[in-house]
Length: 133
Length: 382
Image 1 (tube, rainbow over the protein chains, first blue to last red):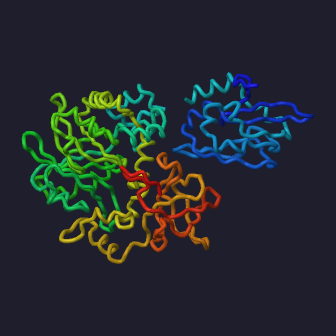
Image 2: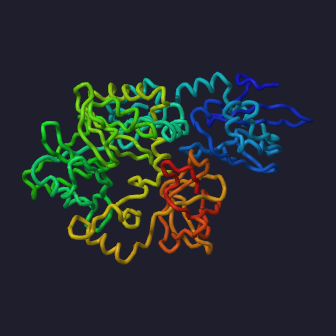
Image 3: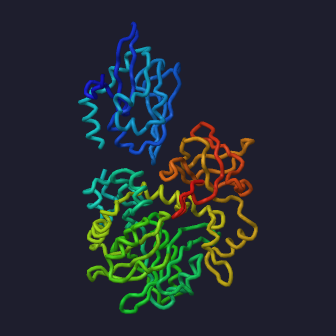
């Protein structure tokens, strides 16, 4: 069940999103893109929120640190955190190897789907990365 | 990205061709990394790394009295500096604040001409020249020439740096002691070879003519390729110097920080001579500094960064982090800070009373630890 980057949605701030229906709710799985990880290089620290917390689109939910810098993680969606990949901060090398499957960060039960419409598809996101690289 | 106002070193195009991730530093476009900061850091600790440090300012002083001029300006004695020797020295203002930290070398050309070379920080070069210029009036036989644009500077640092690099030069530079320098040549082109560096490793700093830079760089890299030599960017240069507890101007040193507070009393020859700032520094040395530079390590794995404020157990602000980040060698965060002198002592178990860092809104317990974090040929971790 490996996730295909081509089928995910992306925030301009480099988080990816996959949505799925579960028992009437829409659950968004969130991670960070391979491009972002490549740009950050040498990840050393990650700080994640707790299950039950609320996130809103465009707001910071955690941070990731490379050797040189701290980068905030922004939620691409609105909702409640229903799962956190709490082992991930101890396995940042694996995140680098596999950002789309092993590297999932949060699962969020959406309270509003409006933010999804603002996300980019893979082609638009790749184009944007090409421009900023 | 390639802003037109940025200076390029003679190796700029080489860095771009090698995939260097370029960024602005002190008005120059320089590589932050090629393949990864951690990998380049480890290459320096285990084999050797090459750094383009051509952005550093190189000022040459010729003529009778050059030593007396520099002796008047620098915190170390220059009058008794023999040919072939290098000293780390500070350039201070009259109040003892540090204008720059420098290396001063006394060199002789093959034809027997003597001169002094002052290597200064890129960010301070213009200011240093302006500071020195008025003093030249008192030394009419001395000329100061800015050699920065005409030359390139390459640092080769690591446990294998000397052995491998020395083969490339005519003179037996592997016999140079630490803080020794000489002028030799490679294929007939002059090279200043200095056994100095900014990584905590053994190695050389080479000054060559700008047009020879790429050739010398590639020669060293090729000679060391099988031994694991790697080009390294400013990212690794910073993490290496932090582990070695070497101060960086603008962080551990500034006009607001005197040499005694910065822990650089060894670089101040205060007796039997005068230099700009001497009286102020001597007074601080006598009464003791109020703030001092220390090493810090947090209790957890969250890196401390520059600017993080520090408090004692009662919540009173007692200082701030001047440099910080992960240590690739130790695998945990390290930092340097300026804190109140009374809190700077390290107990016999190597740790002090914990301080509390306000790390981006979250309190974090940190301990004062001895400097440096890394010592060459020493496998201990603090």
